[in-house]
Image (tube, rainbow over all chains, first blue to last red; front, side, top):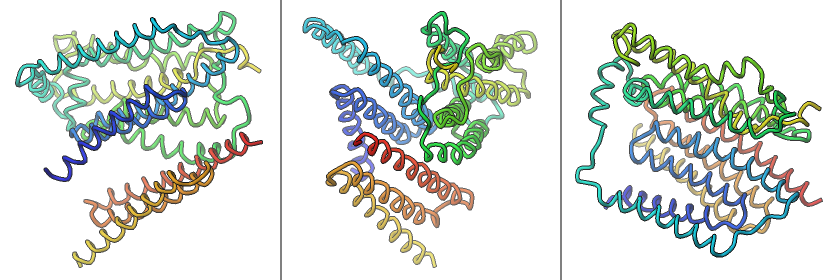
Length: 317
Length: 95
């Protein structure tokens, strides 16, 4: 076996170890930190599987944005715990959870082990379709995402908006329309402000670059959008900007821009090219780039809003 | 000339790896958070810098060499800032 095989085996073992430490950690924060490490290790796995697009997404979303989201959620949970004593689930309930989780894991394992050889795959079909309508794009992943399975991609972004709505609807009636609570109550430390001021311009540039090269190289709207969202969050953490009011018109427009433009492009395809989400030949590339640009706006708006949380009454002070 | 460049790559990357090892040993062995932070940031900055330096002669183009430097500078920036933030949080926690 070559050295790389040993590295792969080491990586796989490390991931299982980190996964165990996520579940076994006593402390919520330690668990979240392990989860972020898990996301970064998974990104390495995707690199080893020659899927740099997925690796970028996993690093930005699995390691980055989800990490911030979970840390924020953990902080809020801890704050809640000090108000109301936590009710411990009984032993029977814990056992039931364990049995159900084992059943799900076992069923998944059984399905994977019983796959026919070779496993059924849509990849050849998708590749053929991407070479058709998505022609002109050098990156087959983007072509598949926006051309072959465009409907799924659009619905994914709608799910993101529904998630933001879900977060907002947790707020109290009186707080509706206010801004979410600031990321920090106290005055931010000077190094945080310095980091935000230095990092944000570079990060925005890299985010737009990753979106732009997505047509021909690994990258795209989701990866670029996650980076832009991270930059917005960094500036909010440094209190350089405050979270917007949830009823701000520009915010609402930014949230729906991606799916709306995507849907309109789909409808236009029905009229011009004869099928829902068909792109007229020769115009596929500019249309896909326009859709991706608006998707970028929506993702950049949605992810920080998920982290910022529901509107809060105290935020107006 | 090629052999010299290869030698330079090997030397720089080995030195970088050594600093990563030293930093990891420090992270595992040092007694408290501030000293562990010290070990970690020095190793990251210098180790990654040396590895990036060693990879530059092997880059395909001037642009990818520039990207390597940018990655190093970004890690320097975020590493130094977060070390300050963690250090401050520790000091506040102690009072």
